[in-house]
Length: 512
Ligand code: XMP
Image 1 (cartoon, protein in one colour):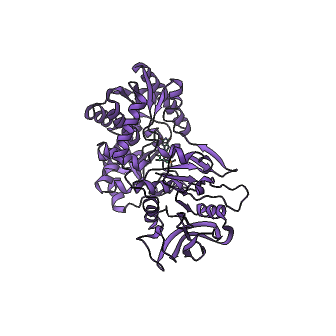
Image 2 (tube, rainbow, N blue to C red):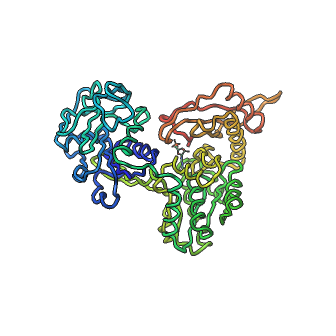
Image 3 (cartoon, rainbow, N blue to C red):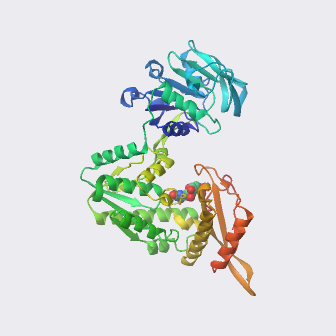
């Protein structure tokens, strides 16, 4: 396993992704929390991340001394290279010539990091993002690659197995970056690369059995990937000690509630309480048009309903949650000085504390795409595992303004046609999220010889890698015309269809 020491770079998580993709388990820890990890975590090698900080700044972050004295291989990336140099007797300066974006390195010497990849004089595109640069390397190091603005683009001390690269090997814009990281973990650190999802599954099942003993676990199902994977994994681990609760808010898409019930109750034989709370939710949302108020009402009502069900079941000491690794990584932030904030998942608010339940979180170590791989490993159907994300407040935030049963029905019909056509055209997996929105606007139309005065439906489809930024999907005009015609012909009550061509930012993915 590999320890990744985080100095606050935006892309530290990508280092972990690349390392895990090569079959090596790794964890990310903030630079000021590494004490004792040599013994408790027992890494085979250490990677130092980039950082928005400058090594030349007063009080800038440093790696603990043990990192360089324990005898393990170390790879410093960007700031990681700079702090390694600064800490081992080299020199770093702020440079006039900053390098951002694409750059080309030229290999000047062979080293294990480049083994089987490049030879001397070969040129290779990489992605840079730095203001400071190394101007003198510590004793024992040699330069193994240069770029136009970074004379020490890559350095190595092959006796101590210390390597530094100024470029970001972890990003997709460094095409052979993944291979260089693999050389570090496999060739230099000697990792075997045998961390697989099958092994994770076995291991996690054993851990859950040990944690839970003969106790009872309640798991909230939403129909989404994370909670589904948790439920199936727990069922495999503890069988009928698991009880699932599916709170049906009445705000799901067409057919979704039936799918969840069928899959879990009938296909997997997992004990499932289906709480049909649609009336309750719609009643509480009656007359509400403010998006944040909608979210608050839905969140609070969800907790009330879930708590009541959990009490009815009784005797459960554990609550299962689909918390993922990005939710638990302690992020290093340099806004207003180094500080550590912990993001946490609040699927069911303060419920575990309120009910005195312990949390079972078997996905805590996984990234979203790893959860999908685990889902497939557990035999969940492909269409379930590779679903687009769906927001907790459901269709409530896709009906801007007041929500009525009639509007929800129109939206469900339009949304079903839209997604049917997207799947039919083979585009579903090229898109991060696609959905229809029912606008609170009526416009005039003419159908046959009749005047219509009906709702407008907006279609949204975006590409994204994490939902933080997004681009609208460039459908062909033929595709859009076809979907528009189908919706207007088949959904009585909608007479106009528009396509949203806003990216995020400045827009958001959802309309509310
Ligand atoms: P936005 O609209 O903020 O959406 O660009 C980014 C991602 O988050 C989802 N989303 C939510 N998910 N509760 C959720 O569980 C919410 O209140 C919520 N609002 C937005 C959205 O679908 C997209 O995937």
